[in-house]
Structures are given as C-alpha cells and as structure tokens.
Length: 132
Image (cartoon, rainbow, N blue to C red; front, top):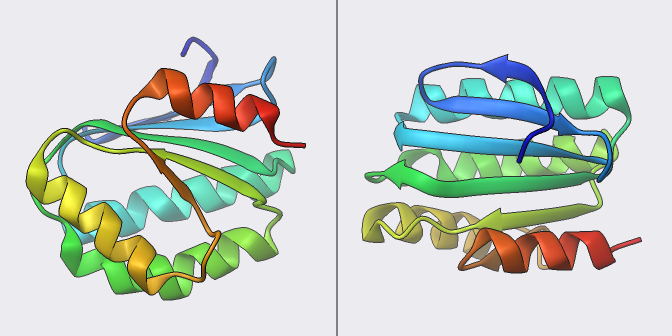
C-alpha cells in the first residue's frame, strides 16, 4: 500500500488510502497489550476524523502472542469503531501461529460480522473493494 502516511511507530504504520477510501494499518513485529491498545486508539481517532467506513488491517509482519488484548479489542474497541462509522474490516492474518491465535480469539469474542479474516493481502483487498 502506498497511501498517505498518517501515523508511524516501531510497531504500526497507518496510511490513508484515498483512492480506495480506507485506512490501511500495517502492524509490525511483537505487539504488547499496551502497543495494541495504543495503535487501536490511533486507528479509531483517524477513522473518525476522516469519516471512513473501511479498514484494511494487515498483521502479516506481526510476531508473537497478544491475546491479552483480545477481550478489549472485541468488547471495547470494535464497538467504538462501529460507532465511529466502521462498516467493513478486512483482517490479514499473520503467518506466526501465536499471532494467528490472538486474532481468531479476538473474533470469537466479537459480535458476528465484525471483521473478516484473510490469509493474504490480495484477497483482503479484493473483498474490501467489493464492499459498498
């Protein structure tokens, strides 16, 4: 993704993909619970400020487990994202097994239809483009 960089840190880059009409969140490396929460709050702030309804959430480069944040993401953050306008959340899984477990645990605790998991960026992008 080559959109305008809105936020950059050691563990997360957030881009505004204007031509696509979504936020692209590229998570990188190990994620602590505090890192996940801080990054999620930044995504929420940007989604609301830009009045967007779509997110492409890329965990391809994530390593390690962050399951300690799963309940917070599912029960606190996702509902606030939806209140801010989120309608479609494409989530690209990490190939790292422990990160994969963290993401699936999160969605098991979230309301059905909150996000859709994908194995690769290409499939996620195609799906997100097809959403109204």
